[in-house]
Image (tube, rainbow, N blue to C red):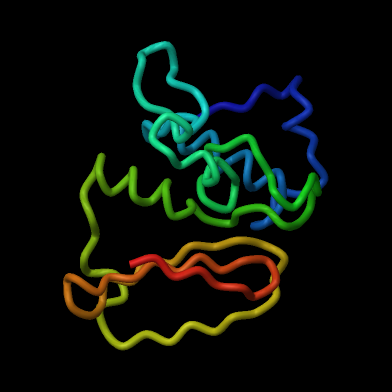
Length: 144
């Protein structure tokens, strides 16, 4: 993975998790792993989020591949610190699920860290796998 040193992205004020710089690195890593933008069919006619009724999830809290940031533009906080739910789903479809991660009883502590993070918890019954997306204010969304 290469970043153009002449680009403004190479001179962001922070590359810490949750910053725009870290988000840029995650986004480009997503491309390297085969992920595409949710708004763009890439000229291939493949579905976009909008064309399959998921336009409301074309946001960075749902995918690091999105160009949209619901909380507004901030270079040092309120951006994803991990791949987000739709990214992990796509990566699992491409490379398979790791069902050995967090298989025991797990405890998650929510803290206000000014970032978004997604947790894949493979524990529990197969029909009860859970995704947790932790928002910047300690809010949580659970997806079964």
